[in-house]
Amino acid sequence: MMFSEKLQMIRKNNGLTQEELSEKLSVSRQAVAKWEAGHTYPDITNLIGISNFFNVTVDYLVKEQECSLNITDTQDKDIERLILFRLEANVNTYAAYMNETSPTRLNSHDFTYTNAPYMYHDTYVGGEKFAGEEVIWHKDNVQYAMNYCGQVLGQQFSGDFLKEALRKADMKMPYRGPEYYQSGEYTYKCNVVGDFTWFQGYEEIYCNTEKVYECYFHGGTTN
Image (cartoon, rainbow, N blue to C red):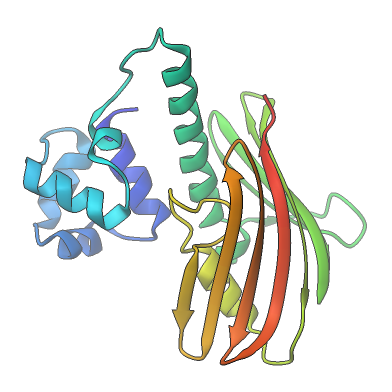
């Protein structure tokens, strides 16, 4: 994956337009458009700015198919692509009120997103107490799965805030939501043990000082 492709995917994962990103980086929208089209390349100052803003390394941004014969490096790049797609799917399904599909089970809620060669499917049952599973396929082969189970604990719970927090997931915390997010009287916290290949975690939401939601999850890659 080239720099232009990475920049476009990361920007979309964070729900930003080219104009909004240009404002964050103090450059013109035309500059961002040319970077994403592969017509020009940012200088080192802008590379560092992009790195800091999206919380990714400069190496990740600039290195392409380097060391393709090295198995470890190839696997790392595959994981990076998988994570980027999971983040992309995240802001195009449940967390963004998008792409709900027909139930696959009795009374289930299902969401599907595809960007070849990847396909994402999320299905859950329940309401105030719920359980579900996310799966990602690559060329018809399952590459990732995650199960989750949670419950609403208080009347002040806000589903809109939960979705808002989930949309803040990034390369550092791509599992559910970010490590910490606050908006108004609501606070979201997420703790994970492990890495994207094998992990377990717990997320919770507080309204002021009252815990109003919790969810346990675990998952990882399947190959």
